[in-house]
Image 1: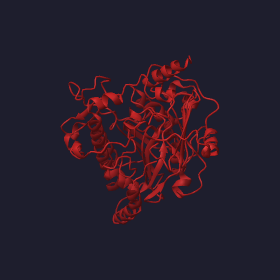
Image 2: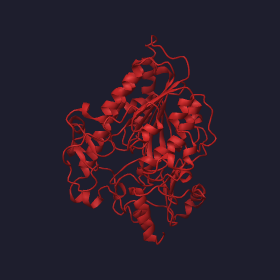
Image 3: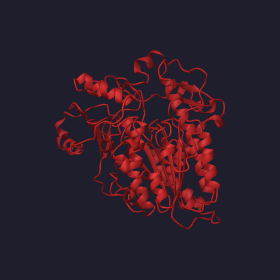
Image 4: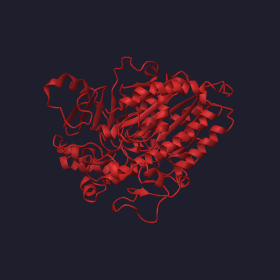
Length: 486
């Protein structure tokens, strides 16, 4: 687990300074009722933000400021390293192994288990909240956000705008493109989504609100205007840390499930075409661009009537590789694939605190219910994080669990990561000594008891795979074929 120690230590100071500044605005009015919720989801954002230290040059002043005003969870993980199952899990508080939603399809409504759970936006609507959202909150497939979100404001162009022809030379999937485009921020869907959110926050609300703001960048295509690329000159840009032979202690299945039938560029192609730095630059440019949109939304919240009575949650749906383990994109059970930013701020939450306990995205739903003093849902598999919001150092016996298809799991504790694949092969990493996960210690007898504790967290039963045809489905099937499994 990588953390920028200097920035983390500065969070408390920033929090105090912000608190002093906020106290100078007593004239603001608040809805003296239930607290509001501002739910900000950033697509495909890994730990490359300032306060998480995933990339030493990442410039994200607005997200960093948000962290200084609340609790930053530095050990938060998705339940599936791909958009649809991660968001379905978060919005139902069910593990993929329970719902059967492991890959880019199906929707929640097509799962016999998940369809019985009330998704988060509709639960808040049932509780008398004015619920609305724009952008990518659930998966981006046609009609899904409209189906699950009352008063859905639209996607404002989604992954667009798109140039007439590809900017990069990569011949693969049309969304896999990167470079400088368009010429102005105002053409970007995320800029428009932020503008929509600002409009909502400046309107007079007669009810408490649940407001979802789903940003599309830094998901591919990784386009942003020139000024964001200027923040990261290629000549001084640092590449992710890697070592030779990093894959030597990974099983054939562990390699196959992260490579077979995937659509992202292969490492050999990236190196041969001298695209490693341009890929990193484009991603960082997109991250800084979306950070600016987050800042615009938070500024509207602070300057309006609802800042003191609103819980803000900022998260991503999964991580992203940029050459680590010689791969790119999501869909892995390693740290770079599962670790996500998670920040929670609001009334009564201490400022500038950092929590290193393992937490999960499916914990957010029960957490918000408790923060808003709503009745818990017994069908939820997530755990309320309110105890950690009250005391980040309290005893926490829970683990974080991620799956990529049934039988493939990562189990994360405060110091360790354990991975088990369906063929029985395993990996174990000690983050106190090896935060980059370069050395698989599964055969080290010194860790025997610790490994057994992690192994005990693997579910004994799991739902069959639902849906078909997506990249995850195809990779899972192709990897199984290599083992002779039908």
